[in-house]
Length: 263
Length: 344
Image (cartoon, rainbow over all chains, first blue to last red; front, side, top):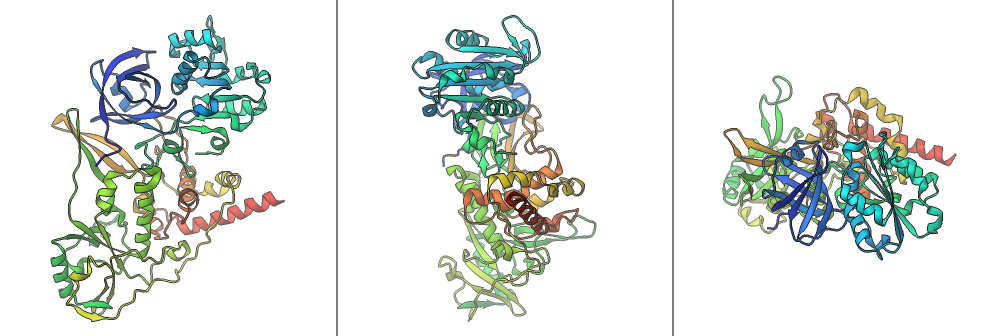
């Protein structure tokens, strides 16, 4: 019987140190997830945890992991050539057809940049995919900055605002991402745009309020949720909010749905 | 037509059945209760008909036969995963109508939700046959009638216990030959039509009312009363949530197993993510989450019935005497209050 929770081994091709706490693991695989989907990473004898795909290409896939839990701590002791067990992909990713041909606004904070990274790379690589990209990307401080090479590349292709929450740093704005949303030229987009918000729960909450203040309709906004999960296939119950399972219907939700999902 | 069996005859039947079936039923475990000198009734294998407990509601539900509190799902040796194995015999479970209806909800989650069937549940569930224990009186914590879970047609056999022994009806042709030759006697199963306690099942008209209900002061009471022990969810016949836990064997860190362990939304940390962020931080939040799942969220997702079957085990097991049916009635009142305020 094909067991949906049986993890499969994949060789680690590379480990990229993003910050002291965050590493990106590149594994060998032919799987092609949707942008914004996630996998269960599994270490035999340690456990499993849900991690979103932070990038993928021909024959490889990347996960950017913050060392904050039992499983993730153990992951950091792995070396290239070791095997990483994964199962997936799970959940619904970014709605590619809804975004195609529109002006895209992406507001991302901290590790929340991971789930939207492959999509931003697609936008950068395929100039015809969207009309324009406004990227607001925020980190707590200089030590928390992820994906520096991507940030440089994206700045050349997109209108980009990079900001640190409280630290003053050359080349970076200061202040929470929320404070920069009003700088996006929404007036010039007409009706033809979509907004992606992804980051810590508090950040997404206040970004949602800020968008409301700016008169952005809920249906134009897309968010990605992070929740505790044990199975990722709608059985374990940890990620449920009301009648919604984040692992099945999410992690990406339209804001019309997401705003009513009170845990 | 049914079959009349004395206890010795039933024992002989059980003995014959055991070649093909493992028989599970509520069984008394002396001195294993929560308090000193108290007993407990829970599901286990029985060999003799007299082992079956009739005069008490089992403290724990029949779900444990199919999805135990803890079970090994994978074994590891170094970096190899091997799926755990399971038995081959069919399982005959003696249980009441509410418990059979509870399995319908277990099936929804484990076999249907997300279009994915859970292998570890299915491999046992496929072998299960139900023997309905006729239940016409119930107990003081029961409210199955209010929940519409007092009746069922989903059984291979039904059984009544009376002063003359056991009376079976056996609609399942697979099981019927085993009963042939016993004395025939008319038997029509009866179901309980009224419990001592009646529950008003609330209807939540929309998300707005739902979210107002979540913030209603009615939940605050549980910050003082509920100790977040999770006894209710362990005893619940419809709770399915679990967590996955890896264990390394003491003597050899290269070998171990992955276990599925029952998890409770009532225990702090159920929603805690790596990094420490938690959404429901109070006993009131967690109580509200459980109650709404049982009498709103589940039905909103799957349509037909509320998840709660009114078995009342949660109330019976609560060390703080929190009554689940009374809580549903309080919720019904709170919803009326919210809806009335909206109309004004």
